[in-house]
Length: 350
Image (cartoon, one colour):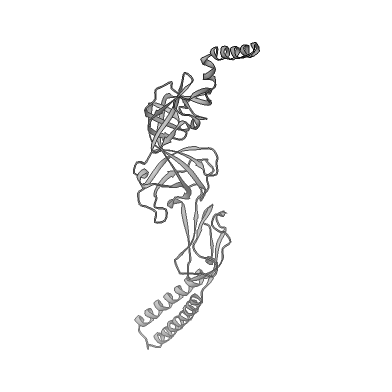
């Protein structure tokens, strides 16, 4: 037989169980804390991100030419060096073959001059004709001119100097290398005649047109500047397999030749579209989806996307203006899960 005390304890437990409120069971369910953003109507652009470097335009390049066959003795200004007009870039010395040619030209000039003097003496003695004298005179003049040209080229011209203020773009030869007569030994570029050459995937390059807007910024970080596309070359680079897009270098941007640059090519811009933050997107295989927070509950919504523009994305289907989508904490949600919102922010319309 149960004692009165035991009966009282059992009755108390039964009453407590019967008096439990359903809300207490709800409180026991997990609740996720998320930050949200509001889907808004705005403008967006189709963009392509590309990378490249600044280079001098062909019109701004000046070639330094070897006047005669010579050997590179030194390179006082390596590629990338800022130089002033008249500053030495490459120093040459005569090759053995040029020295022989120079000696031969001097000897030939002396022989031709002696032949001309002899022709004058013979003409005075009546042993040569006027035609013989004129022939000897022309030969002496030609040989002398050849010798003088070689001597001139073998002098100060062997120090190749910058013809303009600019930057040394390239030096084709190293000390000890042979430079053929007339060969380009180095190039100096006018730093004010710059363009940006970008490597772009062939499919994307087909959608780029001269005049398209571009946002440029140094790859290492810095202020972005607006510019325009000035040329599209669909031919693929043999190494990178990318097409080339040329962009005007913004004035006053402080970009120097060879500097790496990041670019965002703006292919087309549209207004009046739904915009959501890219950070709200989740993927199930190839299918993107988001979580819409409504009434304290997370609702999974598959979405169809349009243009991607930085941290924003166009939503073509699946959302409506004013929907609040989970951003931070979205990956931890399940469909129908209780969710508590943190600070909400509208999707930026840039």
